[in-house]
Length: 378
Image 1 (cartoon, rainbow, N blue to C red):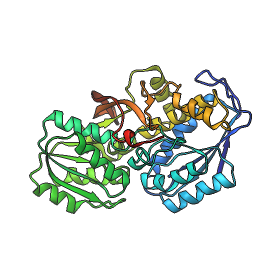
Image 2: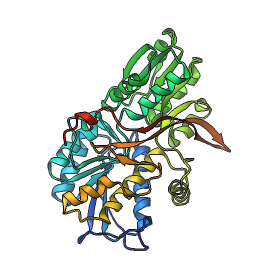
Image 3: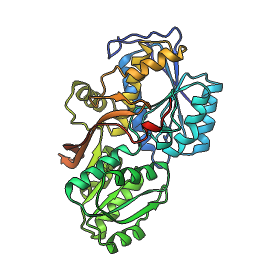
Image 4: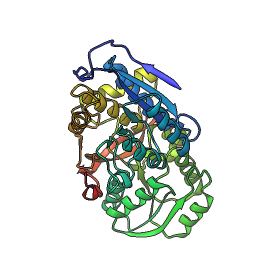
C-alpha cells in the first residue's frame, strides 16, 4: 500500500482553493503490474501530475495495484472504504473490473470517477448519481471508427475484439455507425498474444479492411503479427490500439494507420499544450491517452473540491456535474448519465524523429454523447 499526501506548495493550477473542512481521501485502484500495467501507470502518473501541480494540502491519495484481477479490485475497494475511509475512488482501467467494483462503491455512498473504463451497463439502466465517467462511454471511440470506415468507403470490414465488456461494447459501437458488410466478427481471449488463427480467417474472408480493438500488449502482438503476415489491407482502430506506449513497441508496422480518439497531444488549447510539456518534463516521455484521462480526472475532482465539501453529497455531485475545469480535450461536458459529451478525432500514426506518435487528420464525431443515456433514470 502506498500513501501519497501532498502539502501545499502553490495555489491551485486552475485558480481555485479547497472548500473541504477535512482532507479529501482518494482511493486509486489501478493496474500497476503484469499485462496492461503501462495503462494503469500512465493513468496514475497523469492523475498525480495534476495533484502535484495543484499543490493542494487537502487531498490525500492512496494507490493500490489491482493486478488486473476483479477479486483483488473488489477487496481493495472494500478495504479503502471500510478501513481507509476514502471519500472518492478512481483508477480502474478494465471494464470487467469496473463492473465488479463500481456498483458496490456507489451502493456504499461513495463517489467513483472513472479515468478509463466506461461500460455500457453503467451508462444506461445501471447508471448512478455518484458515478462519473471522465473518459468516454466504451462504445464512443469505436462508433467514431465506424463512422470513419463508412466515410472512407470500406465495404467489407473484418472486425475483432477481446471477449469482455469493453470488447463487446467496441464491436457494438463500430457496427452502430458502419454501413458496409462484415467480412467476419471475432471475439478473442482477453490477454491473448497469438493471433495466427485470426489472421488466417482475415486472409480467407475477402475483407477490404480490418477494424480491431486490442488494448495494451494484445495490440502490440496483433500489429506485429499482422505486419509479418503479408496481409495488405487498411487497418482502423481506436486509440487504445495505437496509443503512445504501444506505438514504440510496434514501430513501422503502425505507420499510416488511422485511429480514433477524444484526445491527442496536438489538440490546440493552452491546457493541453501545458499538460504535454509538463508531463514530458516530469516523466521523460510523451503522455498517452490514459495519462490525459488521469490528468483530467484529477482536475475535475479538484474543481469540485473548490466548490463544495465532499461530505455534502448533493453539493459535491453538482460541482462534479458542472465540469468546471480546463480539460486537455478542450470542449468537455457531462450528459444526463454522467458520461462525456465531446469531439472524437481521426488520428494518423506518424514518426517525429525517432518517436512514433499520432497527429489529428480530421474529426469523426462532434459533440458526441452516447447511445445509452435515454435508459438512465437518475
